[in-house]
Amino acid sequence: MAWNPSDKKRKTMPSSCFLMPSQRKYPWKVYRGGKWVPSATQLKAAISCANSTGNKAISAKAQRLYAKYFGSKK
Image (cartoon, rainbow, N blue to C red; front, side, top):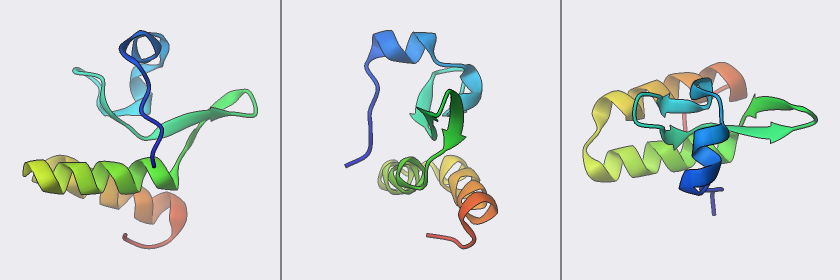
């Protein structure tokens, strides 16, 4: 299961950690080794969630990022 930060945690995370930064939705980075890094698990969860809610733009963005950082589409 993907890590789903609480509302309190989301407020402290940089906006660059979200696929929808204005609403702080769809986190795709996790804090490891002292920095925020892309997470394959988070991107897969974002793709699945976006597809299930009909948000094609977020799904496409997550798929592009997954391909960029992890080599292929989900």
